Image (cartoon, rainbow, N blue to C red; front, side, top):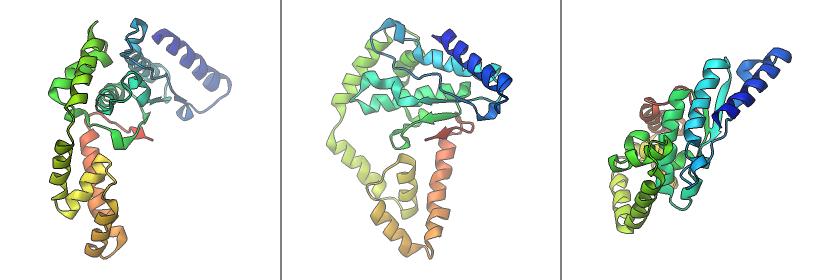
Length: 226
């Protein structure tokens, strides 16, 4: 529960800081990201409770940091990576605004919040923010729909499209999206184009990193992702 999270973190903080003189800036709390949309009523508010616990820690335990294992949130949708990634993105968006400092995530499987399809965002956030009693059922129906919509032809067409971009754009796109399939050939081409290997890092790859920063900047303030 939210109250139990507060009690444990508050007690630990005061034991460390007040009794042991431990530096508060070296404390990292993990208030437990737990699975939602499981069909069990008591689980429905787990994401909201984590977000509220994060807010409470930031307001009441000065300098302490907050981390969490983000993938735990979507265990009930194992096998449907598309839905899981959108759930993680939405959850991160709101948790970061509440003060989340660090998240254990796979950046290669992350969807930018602003890129979540319009038809999905309401369904995803109804579940993440526990806004409707039937949120789980509605999200499950959507998950089944998009699971059946995937076609190899569509994926191949999408891949072919970005592979026609310039070398710099391809390197940037691959970095932003976490795609390593074409790394060897693109780096080999880059080493023929740039006089020094470090120039590949300083120019096209740095452009990609700046793009990542631009995409996440509306929601991330100093977030560290592992």
